[in-house]
Length: 349
Image 1 (spheres, helix red, strand yellow):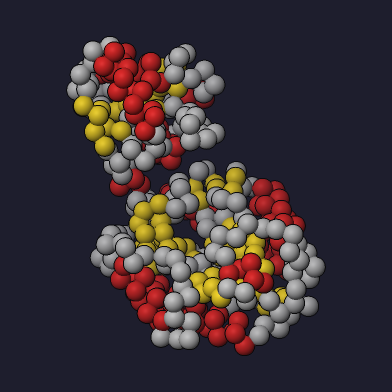
Image 2: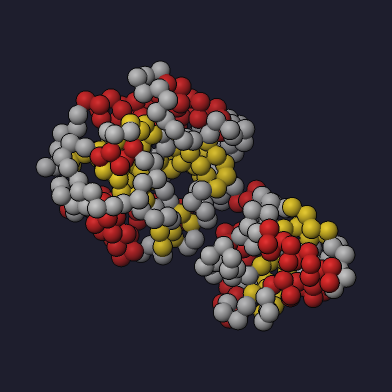
């Protein structure tokens, strides 16, 4: 039973979105012989148009009550489900309904089954990711050249970026745009506020868009006017760490090993311990997906994976910098997909 939005789209082509965790746009049931897409009346026509290989079952009283009839039709004895997407409440309701109707089915955790199919991208998927990245970068370039000014608030900058990306053809944002200035940039996932940009301080941007469901994800840190010496030291440290990590990426290396290369470089400087998160993550139909580049990841990289490499250094009370590129794992090495040079961090006064 496939419930996760990205997995559902990957296996069926259906683009409907779950409005919140408790509300699903539908579930896929897949056997060797049958394909069923169970959904409600809001999505019935869309499902028929976008998922033509599937038998569409429109339920009126919810998936839980429809489930016994579906399992009878499929003659199911064992039902795999995505435990990360199903709430405990829903699991209990399903179990109670199956017992009520005397249906003997083993519920089996099948988490990551579809994610393991999605983890490597084919050439068409990579091209779509590149399109999303091109739109995101072109809007940022234009905003930096023509829109970013001292006195602008973080909220105003985030809205200008979002508006520009939508107008440039993005179907949606990969995630809410992060714009953080001065001390706020020491918060890796800061929420844009009313703080106004000042000359000489770091301004961190983290943004991305979706095209045909596929995400981009990039971070850059800029300065209006002249950066101080701390900014320059941090930037050089991060740039070198990022380059060392990208140079090491190839099939067979683990996420932990790549993270260690960047982290050990940073920890040899005065900024030891100031890199507080993992080095990167996979990007595809979800903006955060496997594989992870972190201290905890033993996953071996494979050709066709797309990952971010985003070292950051954060100094509470002063600010922080993060440099994030998207990287494609190739047969023997890695290709940086970004065309936006992260060394162009100075904005004219």
